[in-house]
Length: 341
View 1 (cartoon, rainbow, N blue to C red):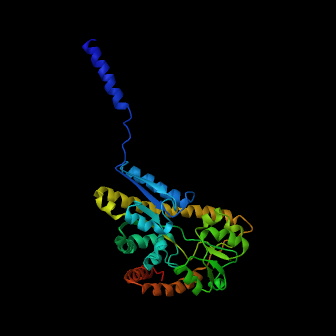
View 2 (view 1 turned 45 degrees about the vertical axis):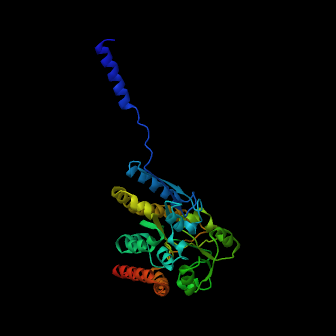
View 3 (view 1 turned 120 degrees about the vertical axis):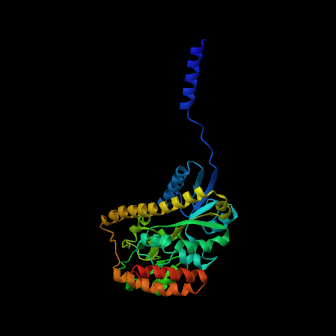
């Protein structure tokens, strides 16, 4: 073969090598995070989207598998599992850990505090909320990356709630803790039922209403067939979403990945908030088109009455320990500065 021919062959070989796809590189970090939702729920899909975006942002260096509720441990044991390294992280409602410290219940869902998820996310990011929560979880071997929020939970009700007086005697499904106590103070008759029994309890008239979840999920699950006077926007519960990682793992990460993780969670907080709101609006329009359903919007003055009742319970919880007191004072200062309290 001539030198010119050999050069041509080598040139073709080099060119072919250049355009051949390189083998995929294994991620430097492969983690498992468990959530508090089933795989079919919108929030679960949004959390999967966060993991996909994070993989892109880190150029494949971090790859996270998102698992549904109960996949590895029960929903109320993920804090311990993350601290022990059984899970590398979780995306969950801190209220599930209230048995360990009342501050988890207070921070996870400060009932009656928020009129919009944006208010709560602003408080978390700029009002001191995230700093306080970070102090709470560090002793458990967990590092708090950042927080997000669901939408305001809608109250699915078979009776119209046009005023706080309408809560009197209402048989209402509510979880134990702050929300249960506040509804009791407002005159309702709370019933502690698991989520799995909400549908049949409304269907059979065992309860009149349910503190369950956001409007879109209530609508999709058929609750409004029996709870034909849903409250929207909600006025009571707005759970936090805690995105945390094992502390030893966090401490071992390079600074660039720590920054990317924090940025990705902040971005996901806003994406989740607005995506869930969009789903709610679609579901509300669907419900309003049904002549058998009346969507009830509690007037501002009645919402203020509910918040005033809730504040009495906040003050009681503020006395439980230093973290609950610090959180109460931070929330009160924030709401006051915004003319909301």
